Amino acid sequence: MKLKSIILEQEVDLELNKAFDQEMAKLKTAMTKISSDVQVDMKDNDEIQKALKDAPPELIKMVSDSVKRRNNVLKENGGKKTDESTRLNEEVVTLVSVILALPKIIELIGKFIKAVTIKVGGKNVVGQKIEKFGHDMYEMYEELLMTIMKASLFKIPPFNTAGEAKQKKIVKLILVAIVISLAVYSGVTAVNALKSGEAWKASYEGILAAVKSGENSVKEFLGSAISKIITTGVFNI
Figure (tube, rainbow, N blue to C red):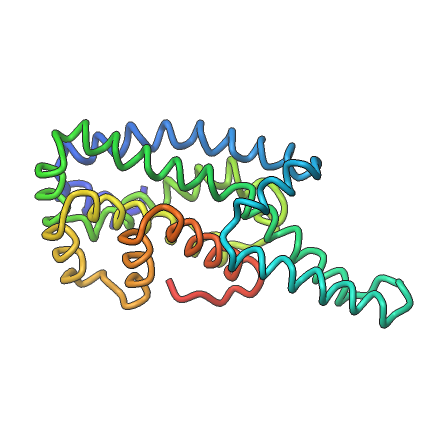
């Protein structure tokens, strides 16, 4: 564990720390299952079509646009594969992988938040704890979640070739989503406390707005963000 994490752990409430540790252990098992399910579903066109029907509109448009660009490139080159058509095909695979994994990840975040809240003693109690040190939680668990992701979702294409920088952005994105979701679930004072913390950044406002708007908004925000990170590396987090 990093020295910074050790220092933070000494300052963080032990009850919340214990609840996070327990739920992170469950998250490891669940992420491994998601990884396995995505690999199976990627080979099943029916599962892909089903996932596309339920996917956020922005992601569906991204898939459609990528397919059209790929087909145009192939047509311009007489059906012959080029570096550009290969890149665009990989982009489609990336988007589909994210779409398949996304509902399960959102469900996991919801379970994580509710379990931690119950273990700590309810919304009011966890809200008070989040007010004090919620902005440090993602830094404490960044390394652990990276280990979990590398043993699960990051083992499958296209995540496995994304590179360390992109993988770190995805890990931070998910952790921030967990902490902000916990704050929103706990109440306004917990959210305000997070926003006033030094670790708060303007880019987190998008996650906060999505969480406040409900599950579908979180799905769309995370799906779009993860897709952009994988395909372009450009996302401020």
